Image (cartoon, rainbow, N blue to C red):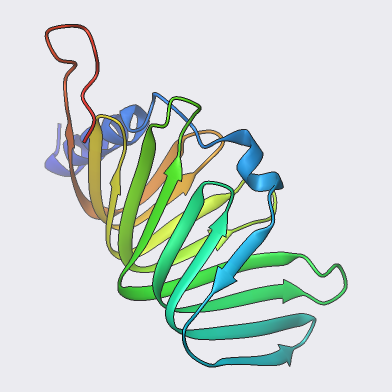
Length: 174
């Protein structure tokens, strides 16, 4: 089997097994999106989209989902007033979200985090992306994490670690 095919199969196996033990809290996507920053904000309209930019130490939350960074750009549909996407950049931008009622969390960081709000929520990590789940760590150039279905799509090169359960049968958290 050619090396490229072997690498593809290993990456696919890693992607399919990553974060197989939990999804985000279902109620998160029904919560308001709350944001704050320490610096100035600007607003402009491009076509049918209002673009709001926040500067300096931004924080965006929706339920247990939290994204922090240096700046944030909100894209809001003018006709429906719905937020389509929030992009947070930072050194690095950071994401965390509670997976379930047990309190387990998933965390990630990258140069930029795109949070797609409409439909199934998607968190996309772009540039030096890392995603840490209950027993897994995945690092790639880019990672898309579908919060409801627990599916990931990546752009490589990628590397990762999948921890094995401890001797007492409990899983170990990263």
